[in-house]
Image (cartoon, rainbow, N blue to C red; front, side, top):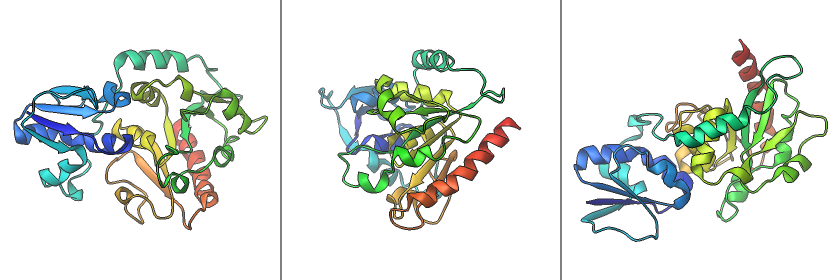
Length: 273
């Protein structure tokens, strides 16, 4: 029996979950995957797991254990072998059906008569993370995109309710719907992402989740980002559906959004054909 346990945050757990299947194949062991409660609805569907348990809730008898981020090293995986099978996570079907129905309640067409593209946004990560201030922008930055036509906006920021989001959104712009307080766990978040056309997020767990689900996602990065994003590339070795937008200088979110705006207009134009 091999216990694979998490030791970092949600994003790392999502990132490294892809290696569980290969671990099962190479070890031929019974794999017990331990993770945080908010991720359990997704981890239960990870290929290669025999048992999924909640961190801190007691462990079965095991023979070996390894932290989840240790798997690629143990398996001898090099960056050239990434990303592996995508998607490797999926939302619970019950949550997907419920959220598809919920999101369908918005107006079917915009002022031009077209069906708007659904875009979800996240502007900050966990405030308890040491470098969160560096990786996070503000809702005011996203508000600069609010008047781009053809978009139905959704906030996936957990702690931002409808009132808080409305206060930071330009008056007269197409409205933005605050979904964050309705997201009970990552199963809900995954289901919402599955119903969106695009996610735009800073470097946080939602960006990883969208990538792991194989959904279109644009990740906004600080000047010197986390190691996994490497340097000087606009794509990601980990997630083939991800596009990276990088700060050219420390703290320069203005330039990031100056690049995002025309890219978003092009994305909408291409989507409409």
